[in-house]
Length: 104
Image 1 (spheres, one colour):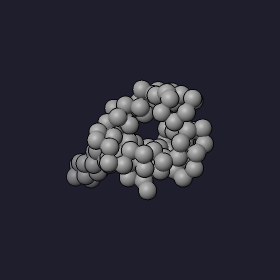
Image 2 (cartoon, one colour; image 1 turned 90 degrees about the horizontal axis):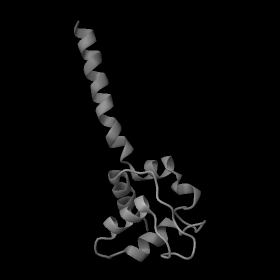
Image 3 (spheres, one colour; image 1 turned 90 degrees about the vertical axis):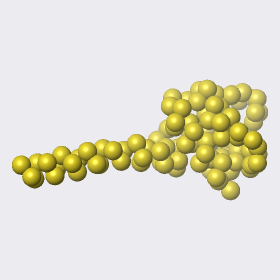
């Protein structure tokens, strides 16, 4: 009985860590289709993420705006090729935006 209860508690603890692990910016970036068009250091189809960070450095509400662009898509900010909407939650978009803004 004690072993079963201990195993159940350990499983519950491991499952509770899942959302925290999913909120890691680099891992989330790799798990989404972002890398098909963006890299951290160089322009691909879209701008390098470091360029996005530099352009938005010190801009008020940059994380909120960037999260909206990630989730809903945007056009004309970095040239004629539009960025399509992404299948991310609001929280995932915020994590990605916050992480991107830390890149230097």
